[in-house]
Length: 194
Image 1 (cartoon, rainbow, N blue to C red):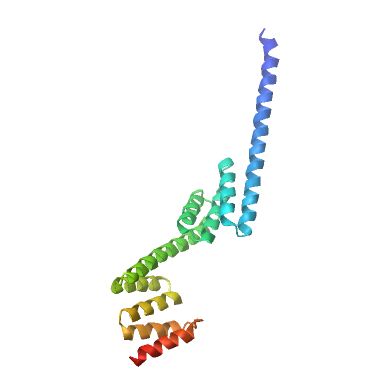
Image 2 (cartoon, one colour):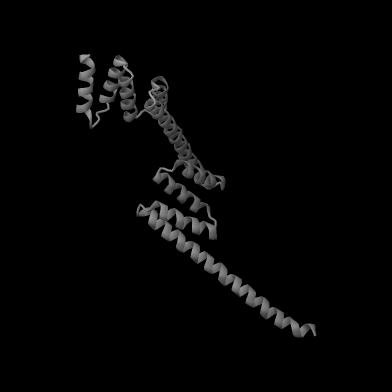
């Protein structure tokens, strides 16, 4: 009796395994399709669409490269917290390019820190809390010098009535050869005339 059921069991088992293999192949194909669409969207500058497609691919077949590309898309959007989170998840998988990606991560974390400093500084300046605002912008400038920071520092110093400091900061800004140099020279002339 056993021998009569064995072929039937084997047939059922073969069918189940065949269906499972087919489903696995379909899921791999679906994941590849989402990944390809996601990368095409990202390459075309449609980052949010690309991220959604990549997330769908990752939900079907998690792969570290998908995390890397999601992080890249978030970085392009300027969504630094999400970029950092995805790059950290990628690095946690210990990929061969972990050192290079860690360098990117360090840069993104610095940019996020700077963005927060500048936002806090500008908010303080809008509240006319000059010392705090200027101090935060100067701190950001020491971390990563950028002409726009110099201009904002000079403008805040001018608004705070710190004529000499404003002149010095505007002159430093002019040395960066900005496009608005004519306007800045006018500001300097007004300050010098006081």
